[in-house]
Length: 149
Image (cartoon, rainbow, N blue to C red; front, side, top):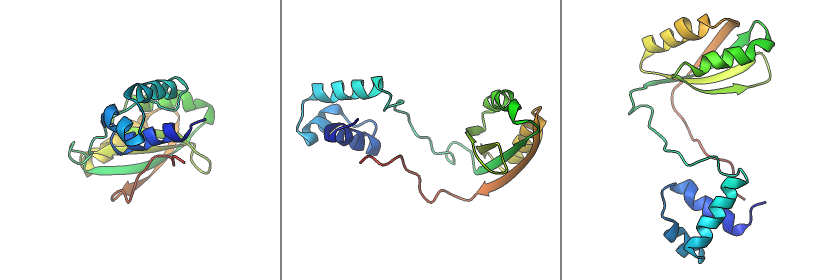
C-alpha cells in the first residue's frame, strides 16, 4: 500500500510529470535519493505504468473526436477484432463494457470526412463487426486520474 510520502510524490508528478525530483524532495522534506527509491518501488509494484506526454489532439490536427459502440456478430470474435482495431491509429482507446455493446471506442479524426472514412471504410469492414453506433464529442468538460488519497 502507499504511504503519505508515496502519495505526496504522486501528487507532485500528477501535476507535472517533469517536475525535478529535487523540488519534490525539498517540498516533502525528504532526500532526493528517497524520491528515486520510492518511485522505483512504485514502478516495481505496478503503481506507475509510466510517465507520458499528453498531446493536444486539436493542435495535432484532429478536430473531431467521438465514441463508438461496437456490436459484434459473436463476442468470441473480440480478440481478432481488437487486433484489427489496434491497426487503426485513429482508435485511441478500446474498452470492454456491459450493455448493448461489447466494445466501446474513443477515436479521433481530422474532419467529418476523415471520421466517416474511419467509421465506414475501416471499422465497419472488420470481420465480425455487426453494427457501430457513434457519438460525436464536442469537447472535454474535465479529465482526471484516479484519486490519490
